[in-house]
Length: 442
Image 1 (cartoon, rainbow, N blue to C red):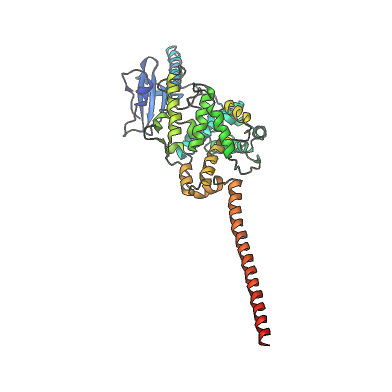
Image 2 (image 1 turned 90 degrees about the horizontal axis):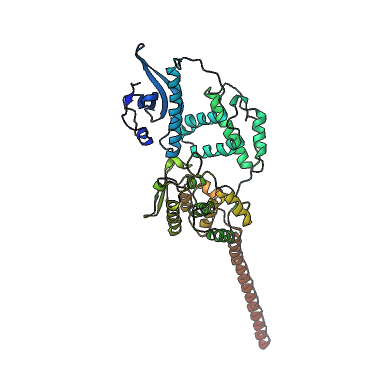
């Protein structure tokens, strides 16, 4: 590890984002606030964290304390500022204790059990991020299924099998989500036990039986799609929760993109002049970058939205998100009650956001689009996935195809029957003619 480097600059997010660990070192420290001994440690892989650090001249050594404040370059400025202020506050507290003569480095640490939020963060940073496994989706799922039920602060060692079973039961109205919550719980506890992050040896989610799930094939009919689009069209063009829903649903339906990709859409991913949306590989389920061509309607929605956000006093001018949110992520994490109210009003209470994606694929198939085109539009890696989950022609189309085949068969039957009758008539006439000739000879 290298000695600290004094930056001589302001304590800003821009400054910290520019810190890079020298290639010949594993870790490097940057001095950012001398009054409180605040530093930023930067690893070779780019990971950054705030720490309290002093040099003991008598011992000729550096002493360092981790402040448990991680700095992530991708975080929005608003959230980064909160992390920076927290790190500054903790460093100031340690400095005050140090000035009072306290030994802040060698005090015994109190043993404490990690809570579920810390367990998930450990699972995310050391498994999901390294393996590139749908980090954002899992973050949102943990917040929705655990944090919103006040389970995030519960100690992992105290979380029982009964707690896990109760969570599953509470979600029984949505079997798919209930099962995914159990699977996420199993995965993060298994990883925590395997890496000895938590001291327990049993997984509380083991033995929780999953609900039976029926394969979902809900798609919008043409009539339902028309009803939905008509309702969206009636929403006024001003910045509001309803207008945000209007733009979100339209873009989801028209592009067929996944819900998480639409919610995390950034302005720097869009080229409205050329009409393209570039989704980076790290944000896609397949870990493969996707380029979505945008039509006139989609570009119109995005252009209007860009202007609405610029005119809004609630949104910062440098906000990178197309759908800003008030949470820590900085972007929308769920359409919320506005979507539920709209679908209930239209009598489409069984319609989910993901059904919009399936509806576009089904409609493309019904209009004759080749399966490879549909697969590309949905960014699938396997054609079988497209065929199994999305190519579902409507009953009307199936009926019409069957009727065409049936008509062809019955027409052939009529021709055959008509031909047989004509043949019989010809034979009768020939026989009658032969009898007349025979009588004349006699």
